[in-house]
Structure formats: C-alpha cells, structure tokens
Amino acid sequence: MEWFKGEVSDAVKSVKEESKVLLVFIKGTDEESSFVSSQFDDQVGRVCHNVICLQLDASSHAALQFSAVYAVLTVPCIYLIGPTGQVIDVKLGRLESSDLIDWIKMSEGRPIKHEALITSGDAPNSGLHDDKEKSVTTDSKELPVPSTSATQIVNCEQSLEERVKSVINSFILEDNRKMRNAEKHLLKPRLSVENQEKL
Image (cartoon, rainbow, N blue to C red; front, side, top):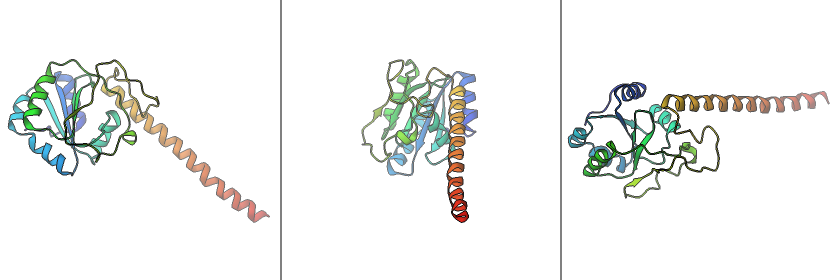
C-alpha cells in the first residue's frame, strides 16, 4: 500500500486537480487501529489506482485539523472523500482487507453522500465502539441537528477550502471571545483588591 507522503494540503490539491478520491485513514495506538493498519496491503493498494491515500495518527496536528472539518467519532476510521470535499462514505472500527477492497470498489461509482459534521467535543468516547463494521452516511440532503453553531455544523454544499476557512474563522472568533472573558475575570479581582485597600 502506498501512502501519500506530502502535506495534507498537497493531497487535497492533487485530489481536486486530478478529480480523484481521497481516502483518509485515522488510526490510534490501540490494538484495533493496528489491525486495520495491517489490512492496508498490496491488494488494497491495487484497487486504489484512482485514490490518494492518507494515513494520519489520531494525535497528530493533521488529524486534529481533519477532525475540525469532518466528524471523527472514533478511531480507527476511514473516510472516502470526493474531489469537491464531500464525504462519499465512512467506515468505523475493525475492517478486513477483503472488506476494504469491496468497499473501495463499490464506493468509486457511488453518488456522494452528505454527512452532518460535529466537533470532536460532541463525539462519543473513542473507546466505545464494537468490532462490527459500521458505515455513517445518509442519502438525505441535510440532517436535522439541534445546534447550528459554526463549530458544530459545516454546510456540506461548501467546497473543502470554504469549510476549512469557516472552521479556522470560528476558532479565531472563539479564541478572541475567550481572551475577552479572561481579561474581564483578571480585571475583576484586581479592582476588588484595590477597592479593599482604599477602605
């Protein structure tokens, strides 16, 4: 199996320019991740002729950036993403080599699916999955989601670049809000101490 060796942004650019599919395998340090990693053999590599494959460690900066745009509910997980940045399909948990091959072949001609995107803070604990293969997608245009903050939902109709910019902007806005709140809390105790000294 040949994994893309460049930066994630270079892989996304290649996917877009060459109209290929992006396969993203996010793995942890657990036994199940090691098993799935071992299933990406030469046979799987042969069916990935029109696919750019990325392997990301769950704790890496690249995986954190990816999870800001796409919901990473558990590890290991494997995403197939179309050239426009839309999710084709997702597999969670344990997956055999033969199942991977069938899934990739089947997904190549499949219409793009839409997925509700949530932040990792809303995701269930990554240790709470079973050994069965799971697929997380829907054919519907949009899923109803209780909260609509920018960090919880990203419009699936936007391009990948627009989604990344949106997520980055929401992080910047959130950081600015936190800094203002921290400044307020830091100033309050000082004022009360100064007022006490005056008394």
